[in-house]
Each structure stands twice: as structure tokens, then as C-alpha cells.
Length: 382
Image (cartoon, rainbow, N blue to C red):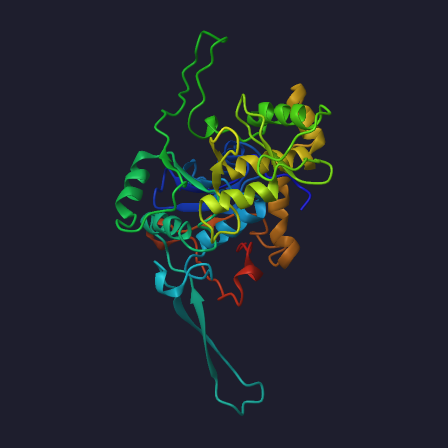
């Protein structure tokens, strides 16, 4: 993998403001841009959200913190297809697929009797079931150690989450679930152009690497000033050109460690059964550090030199990593499965689909049972 960990990547849930029972799941590294596309304000978007009868859409919650776009696509598919995904054990599924009878298969020679055929069909999900599936996916082995968090942007949806979540089963420590209570921006024109209103909701999300500027500057100062630096764990000399080195981001702490050494230390102090740590204490300042933050800075420092220079100097990089991640995510289904619906009205690249329609109209959802979950990881019906 030669790309840095994305600055931001999330799986999101949309709700139609005109038809609140209509929901949509997708993924993106830039929620603001993606929502504009769904609402037809900018070019792009998904075919399933193009109807004016459903627009505008609102983003009501998201799961974020994915270490790569592929990881987000894995979670997205499992969330969209919770009744099919192999990540969820059968006995724990909240919804079950139903069977639909198809036309019998006839023997071309007319000798054998017709063979009955059935197709598994995804049921219609309610918003409560969609929220329950978030809680379930964050608890299964496949995702429970991922550095994920949940954010809600609608108080009524958050209340449904609080009411629907299991009372005796909690999420792993470290998974934040929060409600953004900031008021949405208004269309009122302000006379003070020098003091624009503060960003709220998804507009306040940090989807760039700018927050890592001080961390990157500190790493450069410690690792590239010619002074010998010892690992904070094994105390051997650090050689950034030959080994992966993590640096404590806190001001006043000069601790740096081999990634393997710090990982072992974090796992020993936390969940020893996990393969990747979630957090741990700095060997020097003893502050609790998030593993994802440390490796995100490392991946950016070692895999995106131009982006690092742009962040430190304040100039925009020629390569927009956020847009590149989203473009790649759009191409994954076609690269794996081909454009099966080419030439149809639905041959628009899509990152999710509507889960339910009011009155049971407009959309019919059929999906063959997958042989292996990974084989259909990013399949999207046209």
C-alpha cells in the first residue's frame, strides 16, 4: 500500500426531508461535497438519490475513522447488506432475507420436470434497524478493533439510537458516539463580511491533513536535525531511513519509537489478543495516544512528500488526496465486476442505495446470496 491513511473517510446515512422513510447509505472522504452531489447542487452524485421527489437529502449520521477507502467500502457493504454479510453471524442478524419464487427452470428437451428456483431478497429496513446494525457491526470481530466513531447530526435520530441500542451490551471502550448539537447554518445575510458565521454540522468536520501540521513539523525537527535519537521503548538508535518511526505529537515531549516496539508496548498494556493497538501511553510523557493518529502522521510523512510540503508551507498540493480517494472508490466496483448495467438508465456510478421507499413504491431490491463476502465487497446494484 503506497497511499497514506486518508485524512477522513466515513460511511454516512442520508434521509429524505420530503419522504423521511427513504434512507440511503454511502461512503465518502468529503461529506459536504458528497451531499451537494446527492442534492444536485454539483455534478456527480448517485442515481438512487437523483429524484426531485426525495430532494433535498440530509446527512443524519456517520461512522468515521476508517484507515483506508477499502476499509470504508467493507463496512459500507456490510451495513447495506446486513442480512447477507458474512461479518455478522446468522444468530445475531437483526433482519433476515426473504425468499422469492422465480420462474421454474425448464428442461430444453422436455424430459425432466421443471426445477423450482428461489432467490434471496433483501428486506426493507426501518431507520431503527439501520441504527441497530451500526451497533451490531461495531461489535463483531471484523470491525470491533477498528478506530471508528459515530456522530449524529439529528437529535431525533440520536434519540432513536439511544432507545434502540442494547441495554446490556456496550461498545468497546474508545468508540465515541456523539450528537452534534450545533444549529444548522441559516440563509440570513450578514453585514459583517470579516466575521462569517462559524461552521456547523458536517461543514465543521476536518477532512484535510491540516491538523497534522504541528505533528509533521515536530517529527521533521526530531528525526532530521542530525542528532541521534533513541527509541523510547528499546532504547536503541532510531534510523528513520531503515525503520518506521512514530513520534509523540504532544508539545514538550520528544519521545520517538520504533513502530514495532510501541505497538508491542501498547498491546501489552491493553487488549493483548488484538493484532493492532487502539491506544496506549507514551513511554516518556505517559499521555494516552491514539494509535491511528500516530500511524496517520507516519503514513503521510513517508508516502506523501508533496502533500507534507504543502501542509507545512501552507500551499495547496497539486494532488488532492481526498478527491483521489473518492475517485478510486467509485472505480472499485467496475474494476472488480465490470459494468454489468452498461447502456441502461441505471449505469451511473453509485456508492450506496436507497433502503426503503414510502408506500413500497419505486424500488425493488433483489440480491443473490453471495458465495463469499469479500468477492462482492463493493458490489452496488445499478
